[in-house]
Image (cartoon, rainbow, N blue to C red):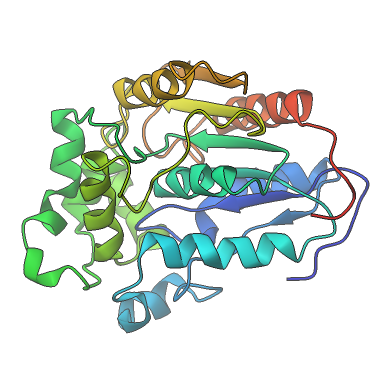
Length: 279
């Protein structure tokens, strides 16, 4: 990872489950065109591998959990010349909140982020998205592929099945089953869950939560519950919320993604705290 100090805060983009860094190509290109150094690392086991390679050999994804992934990103972020803006999509939004709890960024954006520990809001559509994995606890450390039909429900619900299948071909990879089990278990175990964060932390840099109106995986109810959890502590740290109409879980590449990307970056730049040059 060859990061350069461009004078603007670098941006770290964290992808979600069933995806690779390729899912961020839209936002990454746009942010780079504005002069930002953009770093888009893959989760351990994905790294910079192609979608086809991961599908054909998913063994490196097996048994990896959320702490291991968060530690991986922390090492990369600490090697940067200055603290970055950190943005994460879906489970990447969970990891973003975990990194915020470690004080690693100047601003954070959770784009349709999953629940962190103690947030029990679980709409029926969210439960359905995890059912193919959660229904087989004996495969907790596996790396199950996502079917085209399930991808249509989770990511392509604004599209025809044919159009959704084309996107599946380009982007979808196997799951990290352990991540899903850990995420669900943490929702009912606030203090001991893997995704535990200090919601009342007073020195946390500003956090923005973004949701999409018709997202099946992270419906707005989850985003609002996350924001309430932080705000009810009385912490002075900024936590903002924005819901975009007509957007699905594919919000970072869905038609009109530019509006969401620009809002996220403008908010982050406006709210970024002054930080020393070294992370």
